[in-house]
Length: 600
Image (cartoon, rainbow, N blue to C red; front, side, top):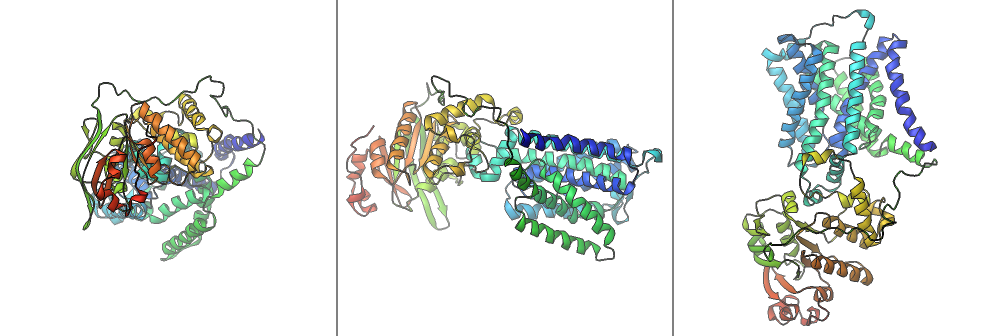
């Protein structure tokens, strides 16, 4: 209780103090500092939606400040529109620019994304300088001066900027607690895996970029009216982008209040350096100073200040959580994951014909044909390097190919992306379980998206019904006690079980299992085999890659054998065991299953 009260009390107290400050103090210096702090906090909170939640680091976020500022200034000078209305148009222009930039950068990650956003900032600065007929070019653009009485001082700038900060933080909190936020955190942890679970990652990132840029654009419009004169050096400034990133990293990237805390630390420092450094080299010195500070924060405070403070608060006594740790404990029968309706469908769940994939001169998949039936477990075996994992990657869309056809329940998949394949009913696990370490076990289970719906993005991060159903699944796995833990706290075998439960949340028609029994105990292996049999009983088709041939023999109705990228045999376990080509591929019959004893 004490910890919760301490964490919540400072927010209304701090907001009340900021609202009341201009009423009790006429010091314009500190009012100016707070206005600049609000703008930096808005920029940092907007950047955090994309850079903190989704993990995409941008060095061009001040471009939205420039777009909002110049849109407001041009409307005020050319069309005599009130800057307080023009700044809203500036927000719209920034949102459109953010959407276009997200399209340009949707295939870039890591340092390439950083470089593209930095290039966008510099390009907009060049455009603003050369388009002198509209922007004033290097001569700048003078906005009309405010007409209100000096009695109000900076209040007409101070309170709109403070209100915009409150709205920005509220939207950031809304995103964080929604399905959109859940998907963004999944993208940060493993974007490819998130796409394989049905998340349309490009849409998630575009929305995050638009939300992050819109409020910064509005703030840039208010800032333009505040300084009353625009030039490209003032608004399309790399130092401002560095300050935004530095504020987020210092306060706590990916947290709600970390960017605000970082801004209230960095903005006063920036103000001191701006007033204390002069001369032609002032800009370079400031960039060097804050660049060095950015590096120091990354090395010595990688988590940021706020997470460290929160760790201290957690040591204080806290009240019990609102939700029971075991909401399904009093249920007589746990709710199981319901399978899709397969009545009336074709018996073939997957048909692959003449599938090929080359890497340079290496033909990793060479004309593979597969036919998988629903409610059947099919094995895929072969020596290391035979192309099994590449075949999995081509079927699920991780690796693109234009040679061959992939038909799932009568629908061609070869031209569809990974989310579309997941929505069609294709799901897979990995040899090394890939769970989202920044989400809880329950959140990992509910993050898959069976179909895309824009309205769903704004639903609660984990609804009560989803939580109850996920607890029921975890009860079946014996992992209910770990529901709110990080997957990193689970054993290797437990993570494999959670990943299987995760893909079943998609209600797939076909599940591809990549070495599910590798590295787990015999007892857990038998338990996993029972789960695979239960999938077959529900009508799900299973394609199983495994080197444990006894495991294969005990489960599979048919087996395909691959070598050098091609299928060299298929049939029952007993049939392929007698094939000379299979014996040669495995370098001896001692490692080939010679009977199908125990087959289910």
